[in-house]
Length: 223
Ligand code: DX5
Ligand code: ZN
Image (tube, rainbow, N blue to C red; front, side, top):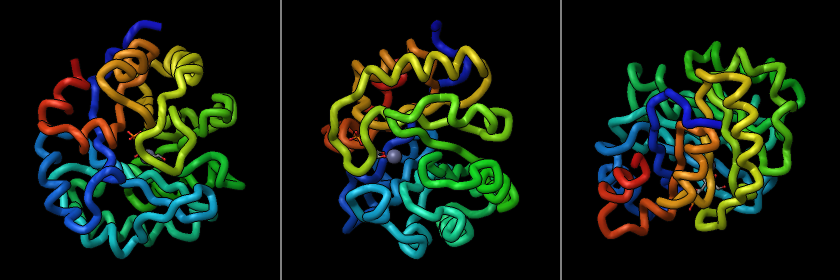
């Protein structure tokens, strides 16, 4: 599959930032970034716990949020996280921000997607590495983004799972204009592999936040 014609967007994941000074950390990357990737983990769907909606509301950023909900019963919390994003980025960037739910956590995916859109946000659906693309076939015309996990969700700093690439290529073949995001194990090398497969949004946690020069690291991912 050739590279997509869509612009490449970089979404640093603040999972790898210092949570004790999160707004200073965001300020080191938001000028250079396109989206700020915020990982929400509940200790049930994934074996780790991160931020609640109240904490999201204390964050401040100059770019839209890309909120990756790794939580069970996401419908119950969509409004709370949307409110948090509104506080964090304001009305204009709110409308450009994503709420992303995992297919594996929803009983009525189509309904959940409509709920996100009714809140005035962009809607995304995420797939674990082992979940096939056709689990989201029915909502491909409803979502603003499909997130293909390239690690098993829960932690930063894991190894990129290259066998997810045929799924990325299949989705790109089906929808040339759809945002396809990859998340997990992205560095200078794997970014290229994912872009060649057809992804156009790259999430990177460890690679960006452990870099001495974060701006340079982000620029390198676009190359
Ligand atoms: C993992 C998260 C990722 C994570 C990626 O469950 O969804 O967003 O922060 O981290 P790296 O880029 O370090 O693999
Ligand atoms: Zn993520």
